[in-house]
Image 1 (cartoon, rainbow, N blue to C red):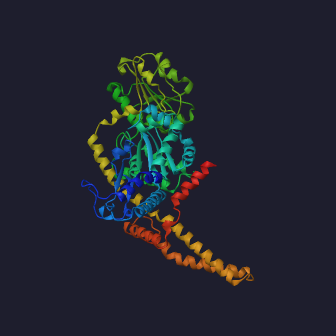
Image 2 (image 1 turned 60 degrees about the horizontal axis):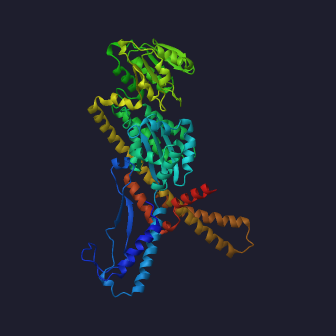
Length: 559
């Protein structure tokens, strides 16, 4: 957690000086009364380990504590010269300021997810925040242009809008991303904060693994979300900002999604938004007319194709499909033999709606296809199908205006209404989810171990840089002693000799700093080796890699 040295200075100078001047501490003081040096005072602020529920409400609880070894000056120091006491106290203050800044610059970068999903956010807000797949690279570039964001990825679907980042500072990164979301969507920051959820590091990892496995979907085990996670990796390849941590996270999430579906029965039954939409429509229709109801599908993309397939699986043998072009409809018709699929262009959509009992919409249109005005003129449907025309809209942004529900004998359902479909078989879903959670737990540990193994990378770089500085300095001394009349060949030979010696000396330490994270024992030893080398060569006093990154990004953005 970044700590402001100015803040600490202002607040703690009073504390230290007042303690140094105090003759006897009040009887009610619960801290130790031993006579001790104020230089030993250590105060810090850190984020509490909150439950996921608290984090999801977007609040990071902060706990300011005095460490268990906090030491306070007391009566035993009364005889100490007041001026010396003040001087020592100010020295302690300067140390505290330095350590506060040092803790910030050495803060490990964090994986953070800032998300708004069907569980926390209404569709009206999600559709404003949605980012089309074609714009993901642009969004990644803009996010990585923020001062405290190093890597980024966007997962934008009909049920969720989630931004995954590697933040050089947690709270600064969250603030910058939230402001960026507000700027791109036009939604005030305060409103986004009301609905967003925030997860960090292990919680963020587990969340994405649950998403990929279909545990966070409206329909348990939904297969479409795994394909969407794969698409994030596909689009991100070669995009600056889709870096090692984020790409590694999403690739591991794909592995988790595949394993969960292979080892559990989570994908049985209705496992997609499209299948849930079909089941919802059939739930609203009288059972006697399931096979005779007139079906209209608007849009023949991935979602529309799945709607058609699920209708066929439920016994529907005839339907009308409206699409911009006939090519996709023809391909679906060829794939589904024995089913009458009638193609109509988008210009005839309202004409087709005149003759439809159930209308499914799943297009990428950013404007409404059905409004109160054009639906009002549609004729009533037969009482054999319940006397209601059903609009099942699974598009985000929506294709059917909410005002259509005000039209007599019309009912509108969107993705938020699919919850009704998944209300059945709760015990079975819980059992499957428990099996999946065991797998996710195992995979989360593996990913965290891999990420921990990356901690040694800065030490490797700093050790090699330290060795190179020593080599260059000693080489320069050697060449100056040899005089100006030595040949280029001799200079090159001496240079090669020095490089060879350094490389051979570094080979052993470097081998003991490399680990893939697959073996916890080896990882533990590797991290111990890293700390030992940092102490031996005073590498921690070097400017930290994190601070270098922050400075570079700030300078770049100021140009």
